Length: 112
Length: 115
Image 1 (cartoon, rainbow over the protein chains, first blue to last red):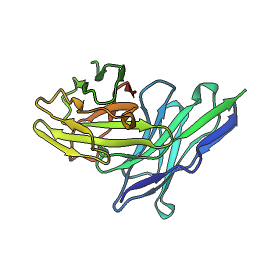
Image 2: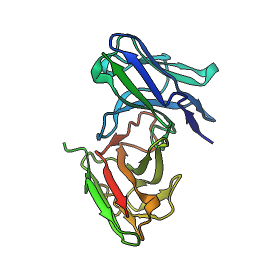
Image 3: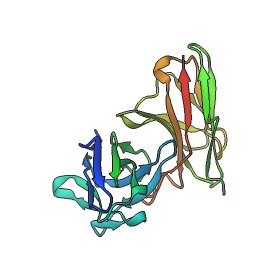
């Protein structure tokens, strides 16, 4: 069965520091992988996606993620965090990008 | 384009009441789905549809009913609400069921409280 693990429930980083959010997945075939962000009281916004090809993918707001098949991971990174990045981040895996299975989410706090 | 529109945004029900959460998309998407979001559990798939007249169960379908009479609309019905159905519900759609290039577009969510 498909599953997604986000090991960190909460992460706190200082503004301007680098960020890495971890995501590990279990999937029987080549996965379609996503990162979404949710600000408080809002819907989900797509940050980036991986379907095939280059394993380092760029997204919006300066985020990037690297697909590592050998480690079943798809970690999200940002070189310098801004206060506006405080939100909840979800990793997801699915077939054709539709029937997504989501991780439990990581809440990012940014301290000034 | 409005995208994916959900109504109502907020709803309070008493145990045993029924209600329908509405979802409409204006992007001519084939695929539509409903998720529920609970703290610490991420989003879980309730039901989905790959086209008008076709629906199927997701991970947590019990207590919910769906139908897809048109391409645009995909309502979610709670037949007899229970406190365990207190949650935030998201409707999502995508262009095509068989293409690897799908990306889900989410609605803004409907917060339901069952007393």
